[in-house]
Image (cartoon, rainbow, N blue to C red; front, side):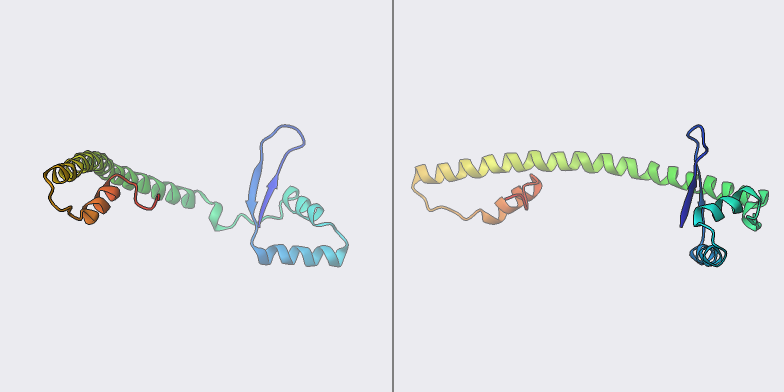
Length: 141
């Protein structure tokens, strides 16, 4: 559970994570001795009953900072590889749309010429499905 503590004046807040079993133990003690939960938590925080433990020492913070730095470096490397791919894929998608438009025009011209020449019509349904796919109309019917 998260507990957020606010000062009486100002707007700075501090958030603590309290394990559920610890909170249940505090609730049991509150019921036994007649305290409200908020009052018990206030007493625990104000009078220094919180055990800092191993997680609060400087070595742990330095280790976490090093891990964060390593992860940031890895993130920047991945971003450097991903950005050109995104750029290329965007322009390939634009090219596909342009080719779809051209192909659609050629199919319409072919149908018109076949009609003028009195020839039988051809089935372009498969090609039209591809055109719809590359024009991003698929599924928007």
